[in-house]
Amino acid sequence: MANYDVTIYNSLYEAEQALEGIDNATDIVAIPFKDGVLTKILLLTGIGEQLEQTIFENVDTSGTSDDIYVLGKSDLTVEITATSVTEGASIKIQGTSDNVNYGDLGVVDNTGNINQTISITNDGTYFYEVVNASSLKYVRSNITSLTDGSYTIKITGSV
Image (cartoon, rainbow, N blue to C red; front, side):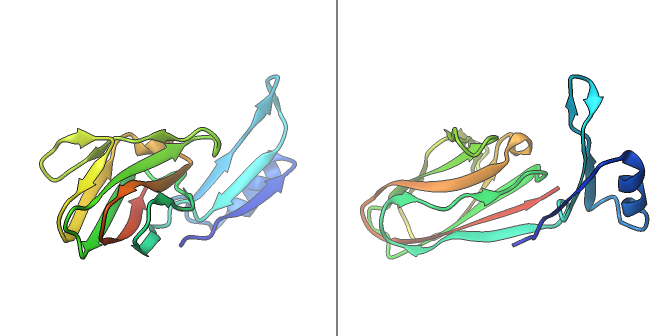
């Protein structure tokens, strides 16, 4: 899992000095404004790193995973490995831009179909691309129904 460091500067000059020698592909300067006036400079490092995190491992009950931070990742892939499946499970990938209001996300399967519910009915490893991932801050998985089997769900992402 990537680590993110946040440093707050009181002036643009201080932030520019801190940026010298840092690879801009992996670092972002965000400038928040209040009423049109510069308030603080934020230097976030680690944003450009590859994300790879298992959010459920060998789970055999329904429920919601912990969320993971995905801000800055425009390409998110969901990998689901299912074992001991005869009837299966229904899984939703959910996202939020505020870590409060989660919604079901569309995912694209290997045939190009977009769905908000993933139905797993056989053993195997399945891959899905998350639709419109670039605006998300956090994602999680939600196994909404599970009859049998064990499921591992991994999220990978890149800039």
